Length: 208
Ligand SMILES: Nc1ncnc2c1ncn2[C@@H]1O[C@H](COP(=O)(O)OP(=O)(O)OP(=O)(O)O)[C@@H](O)[C@H]1O
Ligand SMILES: Cc1cn([C@H]2C[C@H](O)[C@@H](COP(=O)(O)O)O2)c(=O)[nH]c1=O
Image (cartoon, rainbow, N blue to C red; front, side):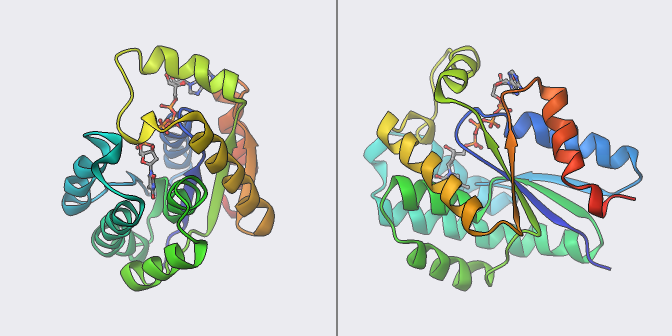
């Protein structure tokens, strides 16, 4: 039996972590076995790489080194956590995946999509989600949320400048438009409960 692989994507502070927790609870209430995981991270090795990526100055890594580190973390996460869970029939709910590399290191950092997909092909044998939810909200709304959540300061990746953030948001929208069979775009400005309901509606075809 094979589980489902679902990812949540979007810019900083749009509500992915909030929604993944709510989604896991809703699926568990329907009797489904779920695993919530995240990137970068989700396995001991990938969590160690996460610390390298998230701490330190913006120029700690150049764009290519950063793309390699994200791909290496993902390879370990896929091999040790995601593929075994899917093989057990578990629904894997992942907070960010390769599409974040395509948006951040690609749209934001200027690495080509072909290069990111090549690294993903080598490191993770090209595993792709069955369904990807893109959470969207206006920059002003996200700014209000992050001002509260990150009052003590953002991490290294969250501190990228506004033009970088704008490019990655555009890249997410392009990817969703280019691959509508896999992506579902969700308005994440609504109250959290309404956002969860919209995600569940977009999963109705798979739910028991
Ligand atoms: N629908 C919502 N309405 C209002 N506030 C929200 C909503 N969803 C999440 N928040 C709040 O916004 C902040 C950011 O949410 P969250 O941490 O889930 O975002 P995220 O997309 O996982 O962020 P990041 O990408 O930075 O990890 C949190 O303080 C959260 O409580
Ligand atoms: C997987 C992945 C992530 N990022 C960035 C996106 C965020 O700024 C951080 C992760 O922080 P979060 O609070 O856990 O969302 O890393 C990236 O640039 N590339 C990636 O592949």
